[in-house]
Length: 442
Image (cartoon, rainbow, N blue to C red):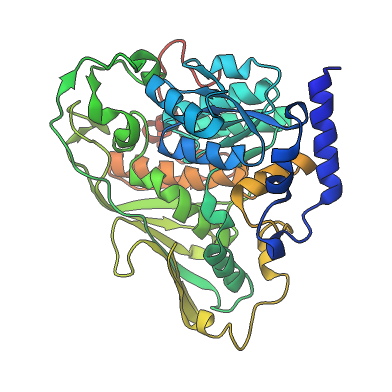
């Protein structure tokens, strides 16, 4: 047995004895106190793959609980910057993520790459025996979600998706209020996720020397370098992401379906109708007709139907602003990152939630912190609060919404067979042609 691996296993077992008692009261996680005092050979080690804004952020949270030993990014300037700021220059830097996955001394990885790279890296990491924390949206297509769920089951790895709203007080309280029936049966939900920007025409140029552009493109078609295709702006190109539908839909649609208890196997959306679906440039058969403009939908309104004819509307703007508005038989409830309001909220002071209401929503655990929850689940080998299965279900709604917008028609979905009903053209959009050598199946 590898000595380092044995020591780290001892570390995990010792943490198991500590447990999670008192985390809320103390305001911190036990690893914060213990990790800095452990000998390097006894601490969990991780590699950060993709260290832009969000990638660096999740790596920073993880390194407070473990040791950052490897950093990968296709932009070498990011590697050097994050290595100095988070690892005092001691981590090994790579441009090829496979070199991190191949290392036997790494216990888990964080993935903060562009969306179209998530699935391939995550699958290969799990197959190499590593647990995974991956930013949202986890997938580029519905088929990728199916692949990740399959490999997660096969490998038994722990996988936390970076939908941090699942660990936020306001959203947990909102779901607990709904679960206790305080606004009655949900009749309608409106998820305001904002609009994608318009932009273009953009200038084509030579890729910078510090960026591996061919590798960055990955499974996507080879195109000339455009600065606005890369880094943060990649979100507004269908080739690499799904616009606001997947960027913010991964948050708000997920919470809405969680509140409806419609994120399980065989559950989920039944039909989607695009009431509005506008793009910055014309589409032909769902494909952009120009290659130097942002192309994701900037103005949309999708009507989704769930069991019991409950409606969920995904919109780019609404009266309430960014957030989720629940309309119930006995009252309304609005929740966002900065606000929780409604008659049921006003009544909490005199009629508080039952003592275990939020704990029950949070899978019986009490460490309401997203990264800490991931570490606790690596310890007890249970699914974290944002597991791949529920996330795949919510992302299926978002991907179907984009398909319906791009094709301009209603879509009926069979959640048990995971097929679009009686529409072979639309069904083909569950996956995409992938460039040879970059297939997500690895």
